[in-house]
Length: 423
Image 1 (cartoon, rainbow, N blue to C red):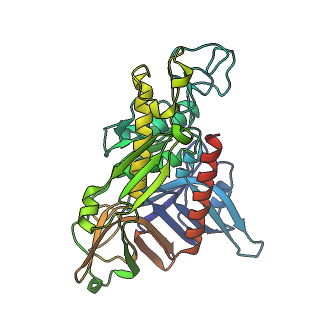
Image 2: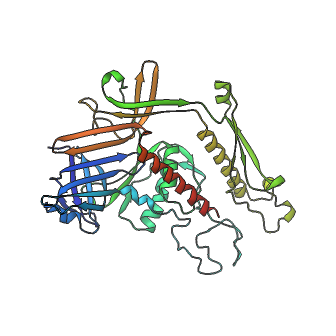
Image 3: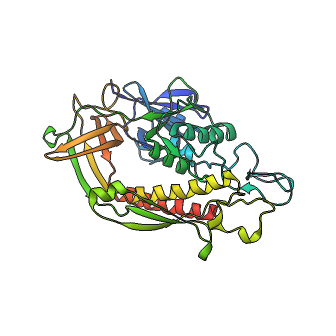
């Protein structure tokens, strides 16, 4: 019996038929990213009618555990006798293409002069003005556990607002305490990935065979107990690299123009002491909204004097938090880096699934005096009549041109959306 099992479900997420006679199946699951599934069946197979039904879904299990689920989005076939049909299935991670609203519980438009629409009140309101209003999502706190932050966004947007067939597991407060990002109509994937990365967590979005809903929960990475050596024969191919720091101290330029502008700095003294180098960079962060009391003198409404006594403490905290977040981001981006891109093979003692390694596990590779620790970021399973092959990937595939192009396009799209939101 195969370790890889596929089944067809309907748009209401109820089982329809097993998908047992497939010609081939190619499934990839990724940590905190969208997976893929391509399954090929004979055009004469009755299950094709189920797969072509509107809203058809496929659920994949590996060694009895749910691995992947999603909607059929692109069938392709031919008209030859004994022809084949290939079905592309979109990972349920695609639910994160939906937007993170500023106020998920209310409508988009302001319906009266005194209503907020997609804005947040920060103080007493004056009808017909935007005095004491902010255009970003109001987090309960500027710092919280990664699990709490992610599940709050997903519950309010996917479950409460969009009424998707999703159940979010109870919040256990796992992961590091993170500085929450500013949220103003990005795709949910953007803040969720940022929070998960900072908090050291993974996110699971998969339907279980006996449940008519997609289950969402965070996953804590484990450390795989045994290191891998080149002599083991488990390394199919791979490279490693290291680079020095490009930033050890940062100046952030905040709100204001000319002499009014706010400046703040941060220095990684430990890194400078360790390397003997100073690398100074500058960055910008003008997203903080400066609030002043209604009767505050106009000549004192100067950005760099925003810490005056009469300014609300909440506004001061928001400003400092925004600047500090930009400083930390710049130091993180300029920190020394090391990375691996390794494809592994499996064996009787090194295998994927229950009792073996899992997606997101930390794995150590040792080669002489060189040692790297990185996560298993992808697992690809290819199955056919000839059997199954499992290929785990450690780190990122830097030699994949399709992946590189997708990352460039995604980064450009993220930048353009951020620019549009900040106008």
